[in-house]
Image (cartoon, rainbow, N blue to C red):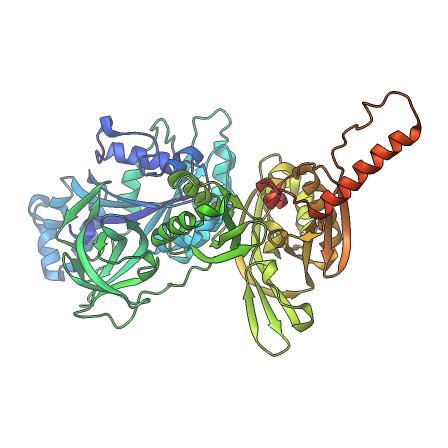
Length: 634
């Protein structure tokens, strides 16, 4: 396919604004998928994606569309390519004999390469790499919800990638749709004209054909490169149990052919392109991928850690001197301990996580041991949604019963001897006497809410030790920019935001930097024994409140025993909160009828003596719910 006839674009939007539904309609209109094979969310291959209604893994697909819309632009390009004498000759001759204008009489087939991107903030790096693989983007906005936080984040990424943005107003058929108001928001955001916004209903197909014509007309074709070296961008990769690592790439320079020797410029890994081809939407093998095209490569690599998202693929025979810009290592900043309910399943858990890590290069893990929970694995995630997805996959695909500890972030610790540690759990904190400072990660966040909820949102940010940076308005919506410690937002911040804004608030964030704070380790004792899996890092000013709240929640979760159980929160050797779980009481005097009161006292004293002995030697069975007590709402 000629580069002039190629259009590479992606769909960006907030969660649940209709990306996958629109992709379904485009596949139907272009005849890429037969109607009998069509189903909702066709590009979402995972069961979790269908159940949650969100896109977790991006999906590329190639479509072909015939139209004469773009021929006027082609004609202009041809005119510029012809010298002045030939141009004058063409203008004097009839249009039928003129190359630029003769082409415009007939429809031309265009190759449309679509990338359906995830909408959640956890996968923003994958989205940014997908945008780099395209020349244009469809910005989808829900006509009933308007612009949300993730909409803004994706627009910023698209502008940074210098993409042609086509605004699309979706769900105009809903009774709650407010087309005029949301159109004004889009105009204010993009600076476009109201006529530039396409009004569609992806569910019914209303207005969708106009999108294809706009893609051909407004999104530029890939620029032709004169470089002889091959350079291709990896915008996604995954591991197949039978075929090895499969790369989704966009070729910028040169070409990649079947059986070529390839090299990853960032990791240095080398391999063989066992198969190359395109997705339509199933894999369709070909001989090569040329500059400007999007497709896949089946490699003989054994792990996605050798071919990470954002890396540059080149040929070992003529390697490129400079990699494509923008690559960075994806670094997790949410950590949680995963333990099997029974230690006999530890090896199965470890093998399952190793298999998942083959297809998810962002997944980092290390062994962990807890006196209470036994052997387990501490895993790093991109965010809470990423953690939830991995947990559900482990439970479903590998049939594991798991105990998951409270999520935390990592901390940078500087010691008196000048060395620095990066700890991923509070239990790994060294002796406080050897610590100079502890730095915790802070984020830059944006919250989009109706202006009536600005006051409660700012109060919520302040309660999380956050700092409001800016406040701006778009029509009747407010954009609140702020900074806050990541650890305070991990548990129930999003739930609280939805609660105080009646469900209208949306939240987006990115990691900012690490800041030194007055942090302490808060330990919890159950029946006089410290439970390391419950230890957390908190700011000293919040320690008393969090300690009281947590032991109160533990009291609700841990079942009563035959002896009294004390629950305590402590900072070092100082206890700051306590709750007691009263013992079960059996009435041992029921068999006594009359007689001296000393008989009754004797039986009760014997019971008390037995309970003291039980308290000394008894063990408290801590349920799995206790280790996620920080996620429990009041």
